[in-house]
Image (cartoon, rainbow over all chains, first blue to last red; front, side):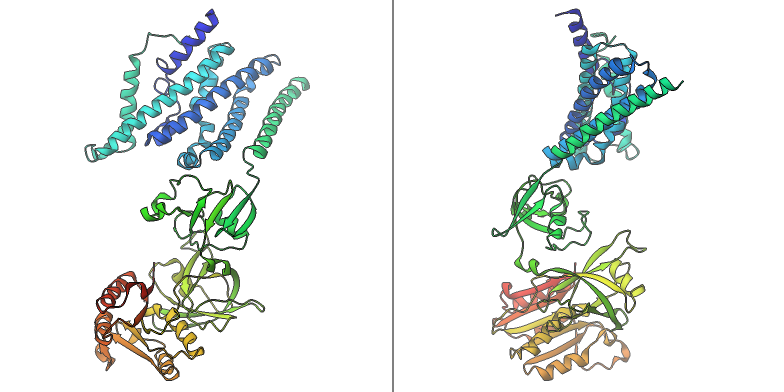
Length: 200
Length: 367
């Protein structure tokens, strides 16, 4: 494999494990906490995020390096990125409604809210800040999406199990409290991967 | 100075235009479900625009499925048997459907979107359901907590219903409801009067519709109703009839009695009216008149807890005890019950113990 290819591959793996956008940067927390009650809906939202993140990083990379930079319009990138993401989420919403109505209804308001899922804008901004090439950006966008999906699916698995042992959780910690603690422990566990791959 | 400004604005506009074009294409392809066919009861076929809920699609075609909440999936009334086309059950439907209904492919019409060809089954009677704009002709207090609401249809409008069926009464938005809702009430008047309706409405504390009727409804007000609905009506047979209904449950029975009177029905019939005290009795004179007009009809009011000053000489006791006293053998009886679920369940028990076949006990439970 070429050097570019290796770099993209290591970025992909790093984005999933060592630098998981959710567990190390704590981006995209709101839907992570709210849609992680069931594995089925969590993987559904996870898939949507993977799709949106991969597509938007690619498109935003092209827009940034082929339109904004040549015209010296780098300062427009926030607004352009947001608009591109919004359009994509709308597209995904239409597709999900067409393909799987049960998923559409269980995701509910969180599907349109991917528009302002900070993990997605975050991934686009990281790729610019870290000066990734096209291939690396593609790998990063996909990897960050998969990482996010992995984290929310793990969380949903844990919460599904937890729901079966009612009454063991202290009252004050039920719901968001215990979920945040679990998220912290998951983040600690993911530190175990650090050093295996480097994101930069 | 102008150059960078134009470039910036131009690029932003360009990107927006591209995305907008993309969305327009997506809307015309992905979100466009085209014309789809809805087959009703395997014979009638409608061509409709896809993409909307089954409830509003049918409403557009002038087929009214009963619905109290207006399509939010919270009342569970718009149940329809969908044979084909609806796909998997939605999470929003699950709490409203029993295990039996799930097996029979019953769905909530307000939640299922019509995206491909549908095949559904609805009761034939729903084809007769229409929406009407009516005016309040008069409001009469029947007792301290029951009002008679007389509605007058617009010239040219008329309703065809069977005695015992109900209509839905539209309540506009007011302090108790942020959006218009519909509530079901049995028609109390004669089915032979087609340009007017009477409803008997009992005040339920904090009830959305009853509070509205008691507090705000005035004569000459305009009201939207739709109907008729329901399969609670007099069956054709030679069996003796037992009516049991108290309070505003009188409404469908009164309508049935009007029908019997008009048809000069000679069947033996007894009407047990359960009330607490004399102050809960109403339309007694009318019932006595029915006794004169219908040779084999008897009206039997019974009080469970008469007030000290009531001077009551009629039957005393729970309605179930009174029914048990008068109905000797149920083998030749057909029963019509209207009232609260508790009262109906108790009466069914008594009637069955008297030998009334279960499939000949018809009832309209207040939900």
